[in-house]
Length: 271
Image (cartoon, rainbow, N blue to C red; front, side, top):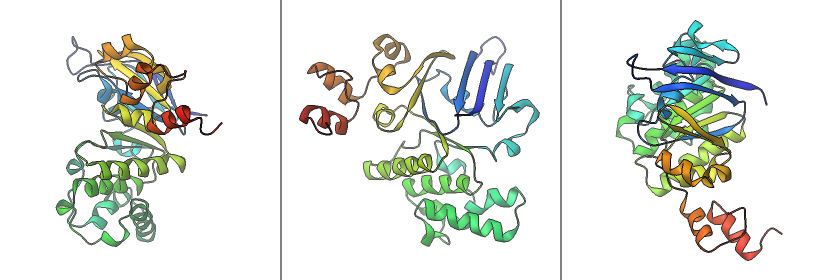
């Protein structure tokens, strides 16, 4: 897989003497589904906001498709890397859903017919094709999250960064949101999710980046990360319930991370 985002000894601080990122180096590859986890203040959101130029390194470099973000503005980078905020209301300010989704393509100077097609495709992708004329601010939290996702999908980004996409959602809305994200990943988008929800990490992520005090503490697949108790303790996160249950009842390695995987192992399904 080709490298789409590269961090090379990245330092960043709101105050020079208090760096939030401490020499982070990593590569994010095209088509990955990556979860960034860590305790509050660990630097995970700051790391993610470097992906599309919302923040620029104090030292070191971030490259997107080989181009240094210091040479590009946010508008240019947003065509490659789109950022979906934790609170969708920070992104929604138009009077109709259709106008909201059309904002990005219009800002990029697309012709009307291309904008119309992009909006239609984005609304269809999130299941809101029949809601285009509705007022977004009166929608449910789950629907507003979908509107925010549609507004970035309309710009055809290569990479989608989602900051706590399931916060405040009930179980059904959370499932709908994450199945949408799974589908976007299947269609070829690189997905980067910032989350505190370890069940979400276990169910969807292929790779987990653990941040602690601005440093990259661990980087690997979920099975590897959740088998590192010292890493989890330092990062102030807990392995998903199914993994902890598996350890308690001494199931065979690899210990299942999800209910589906646990059922297959205990019942011998899929052999």
